Image (cartoon, rainbow, N blue to C red; front, side):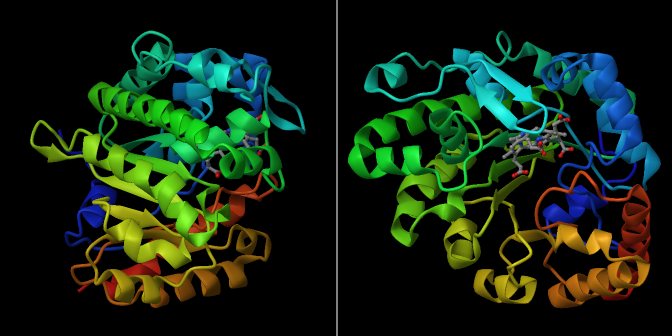
Length: 355
Ligand code: CP3
């Protein structure tokens, strides 16, 4: 069944809309006092993500507070390696940590493709519960990390500034890295298809760290696997298309190549130009992005001006589809009122770009 507000899905399919729809990466998160309250009730990030009731509650919080055009499943990209037995925890102020990171060939051999309806059943339960509670108000986005980005965390054991361990492995033992990426790819395909089956109406793949690779290696170690995933995803449910969005941070050098893998949309960071991306792709994909998240700290006037700049950069929406978003996740110290200003400006100003 179509959501009452299906502007986001229409924009992704490059169909006409009345205004530019928007949602924000990490829209459910610590900048919202109601999120912090639910998180402390849960006790930990993983307890929050693993409770379908609480995950549903925080997914809906930003959608209820602001007039957003899509909800995104509350979970994390690192649920897959956790389900593979790597032991994920989030230490306050330190980000994610894996108890058993991957360092040897035998660590890779032990990896398996988690059954999304067994090890990751809590995610599918959350998707079903969110769909029921949303009651078709706006579409629900499902998501996963890319094989490459997941591997970064699996090898580093957490966040990293330079990916030294993982890059050393790529240069020293590329065949072992490809084995790791293969398992991740099959896991992501099963995971996203299960989310689609459970009710996700669009899916986004976060290739957050793909852009840290040298030009040719990006194609070999990230894009190749992104293509395999896009090729293997369920394309339609009950006659409704399920669009895909691929987001590689730092993707500007590869926009044309990403457009060629068959994704419906490309997510762009704030360093990219929407205008140039339209030219390079010949409007064969929709574009999502790309306000610098730091603009939200600069007050109402700057927020309105910079939002208009992004909308103007995309230009007149003909057959192209623009979904407004930030160029990366919202910062945890963002004032919630700034988001309201942004939503209002995008919704009102963008109407003049839609003929
Ligand atoms: O967008 C949403 O509202 C949906 C939920 C969502 C989260 N993580 C919740 C979360 C999504 C889509 C993600 C994706 C994710 N997780 C990515 C890709 C997107 C990106 O931002 O690049 C990455 C790289 C991760 C891994 C991850 N999860 C890190 C590095 C951290 C710690 C960062 C931090 O801000 O502390 C997390 C934790 C996390 N995932 C939080 C949230 C709301 C904050 C943790 C908390 O509440 O304690």
